[in-house]
Image (cartoon, rainbow, N blue to C red; front, side, top):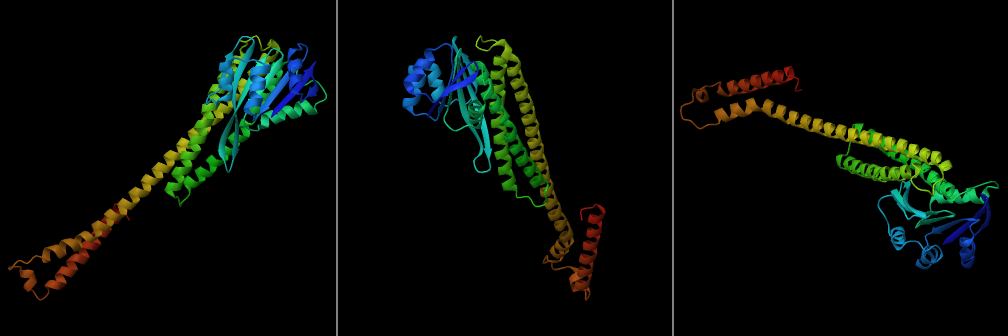
Length: 324
């Protein structure tokens, strides 16, 4: 689907133009054009990216093919920016969607293969506002990135709730070890994926905030620096949650080791208690011909008393050592 929005002096003056009208607006230097490609067909993205805007083939290739890391490329008269939006649901868990931007002097082209909250929020602001929406494409790009980064916070909140549930599970009395290990691995994968996205995305925003490109006006630099600071706070929060996850894993391992030691301790104590009976039984079970105790009328009683006394002595000894 191709959505288009035309701005004049920062106000929305038209939208969803016909294809031939896009060519005319593209040639009008007094207008600001925003084209959003929402899950486009091959014919649609080829028309916009190749025919209307004539972007570099490498930029188009990077746009259409999924990219695992955010980045920014300067093609002199436009910037190609790769970003990642995040979403978190209880069913699909952690998911990311790539958002590509082509930022020119008087246009902005956005490309994504799935509906994005950040893009829809920017569209709602553009269509429902009666005042000035954007006086430049860099302002539009900032709005999209701002909404995109804002959506990281609820995602982190969902991950934090999962982490807290996992911590409670680890500290509970009845812990299914296989289930806990699976949860830890899953949550750790989500946090690792989150950090993998945030760090390079922070570098992208930092490059835009430094004013290295002439396509970012000086008046917009403080806004991009604010985005960079927000990403830095989100990254620090993600690192803190990741450290808590590692601590929970250490607690789980220590708890599992303690439980294993308690089991070994019990089996060892049980073996020690039965040792006197085994020794006495083994001693008098030998078939020697000359054993005076066997010929005594009280031999059986002596053996029983010896077994009982030595067993009781072993129990008291183990209690003194606090094995019981």
